[in-house]
Length: 86
Image (cartoon, rainbow, N blue to C red; front, side, top):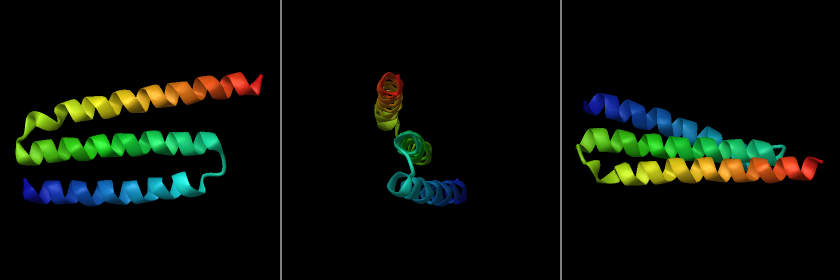
């Protein structure tokens, strides 16, 4: 189990670094929003890996909260972005 958790942590860290690069240097606002949404999903995945590794279910509400905040943030930005395009 430890090998799988370490491998997942390495992959999630690499994904987080690449996504952070896209947030910082994204050519448009929508690229940055998608990257931030991906970063939220990576953080939720990291919490899920930690919950599985430590057998601690107290982080599950945090995973749900991250998923909701990520979805609502993306929906709000896309709604206002569509409104600005008209």
